[in-house]
Length: 187
Image 1: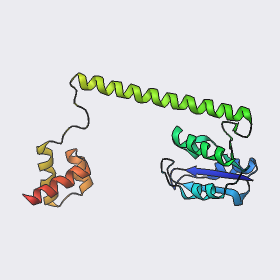
Image 2: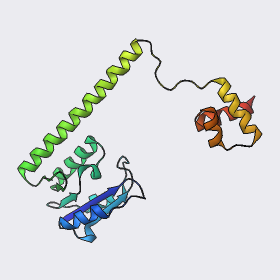
Image 3: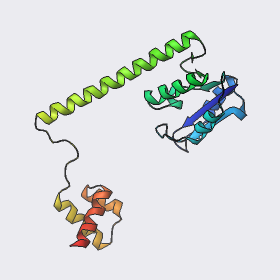
Image 4: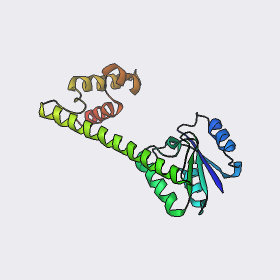
């Protein structure tokens, strides 16, 4: 049986293009599962529902891999699960079908290259961080000045501006402004 999965990141986005592609790939409406949620979220209700229905020899059809997973690890984890359960994966955009030996090979190579690229990026970032640290550069966000915090508290006490306006006026984050206000109450 063919199952389709479609996902967009926000409620404002539209699933129509993905659903149309799933129909063209032979997936029936009753077997299409849709989420309007970030792919980075571990729990996606429609995906979880679809996964619970899969049986040996079923095929999961997606428009592209980025609709199913937002990281190589997520994608490989799902792929491993599909393989263990005897479920095939077909990506319309990438034209990869894991029901064929060539499709499995290409998927594995693609995932390995993506993982390699991700690790190179992490290594480069780490090396850059260590070089900057060794050169004596301060890392992270600079500390908020006491003058800016005092000005934020002063504006808050006047009651003429919203917190958002105060943040913009003094150049501090909302959390820093709230902490400054709280600290001023304790003094």
